[in-house]
Length: 555
Image (tube, rainbow, N blue to C red; front, side, top):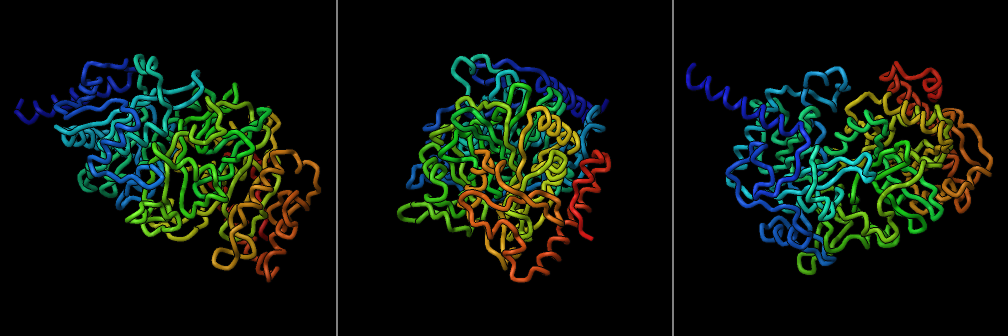
């Protein structure tokens, strides 16, 4: 055996030991290394474990990772990557998982060998470097919660993890078991030729090893969405429907869900002063009800208004972390209208920064489900009621517009279909999630509405954005039951029920064709979108016949 062969076998044995450790439930270790040596992380610098918020902010400022804004929030710039980079996300193609994963443009396989090489490079890069460790949980319901460990190179990203995930009590921390490990090291850049990736950035998920590697990107959203992707795989095996939605409840405990992609109003419309916020982005629906996956909110701030979004505005204070928000160079007052770095300016804060939030974030079975879409064509009505089969059709279609800045390279709205309003985070076939939702809609007799927060009076560039005040009024009418009392008509193209009146809303905007100067141009544009729906749904040949028949018509 030559020396090189011996070294290779030794490295493989080390990695196998590391992966065996990662695959098991690891008891929390407070031996000075916090169990990192068992993961192959040795010869490190100083380790900071579950630091309180003030100390994390001090470390971030000391390391010049950001500055304090006038409102007290830490403000950082994320550089080249100002949004998620779905083209740089990979799933390790592992035995036993290959047939389960829905491989496609967003679920891209990477070999175990390439993953091992990335892991080795990460171990080498971290030699002598300080690390920040956060141990917490994903999933509020103790019956389903998952222990998570986030290891960061940056103090600011560890602050993000601290505020976004569920923070343990001192007693829970002493017995914490991490079943998922996320290692986020922005300073480590990958090499497409060597690593089999697409750029210097990479987000690689190993479901078998319960390990996520993130490198090359400072955008903190990759951390939370990696955990969500993992939950979208694991929860289905425990008969929990994982959902990309916000949730709130009224004073009587009546729960509502708001599905939608970034920029459709999910966070804004669920942060309602008259209701109690359960969570703004990721939830599970079990036989016990709805529960928040997270301990924080991650809201867009572009053109944030104290008038239109008072709760989010007030939540941006000491302990919050803003990304790519421009500050006045002297006063450091945020300018939320300035999108020169990106339209995807963000803020992360604990959910309890919202004054009327639900702690813990658990609600009952929802009586109202709302799908949010930002229709860039301007042809969908601002609110419609759906049958259960129509609900699954629109859920699996996930139509909206990618708004500027949500992903790199998107500078203006683009029509898109994102299955289940969260396709980039779904490792399994959308039909799995669609069937689970249908079962729950029937069992708990929930009403489903499709709300368009996009354009009216014409497509993007011609029409105008639907006023947030009108969207709020329509949502309020749906939640209060007022929309059960009004008359409806069937839309001739989309075959969905359009209300003839909504309390507090000018009826002239309810029929989108009436808002266009040229009715024939509206019909042409609507049929074009209907055709896109039908063509897109061909991706789901195994969908139930009744769901396929809920498709719009375009001929």
